[in-house]
Image 1 (tube, rainbow, N blue to C red):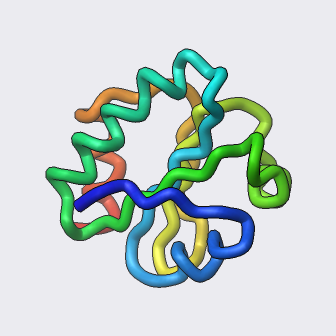
Image 2 (cartoon, rainbow, N blue to C red):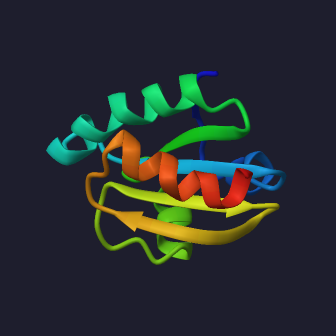
Length: 104
């Protein structure tokens, strides 16, 4: 599975069903650039989760609505409800452990 880029316009629709992980990031953010390949690896290993990414510079409305103050921030939703929020860089192992709580 690949990571799908989403926008303010389709965030709610794209994260409304099942378990989703959204990576909120920006091109200028060093830790975000480190997090991106980890999210890509997680997406390849976990078909039960939909992986998305949202550029906060281009989509400020969603970041503001979610109260994101630092990036990278990973938002995990289950059936449209935020169930987990991870801020800062996280390893593949850490991300998998969190996702296992919602996909097991």
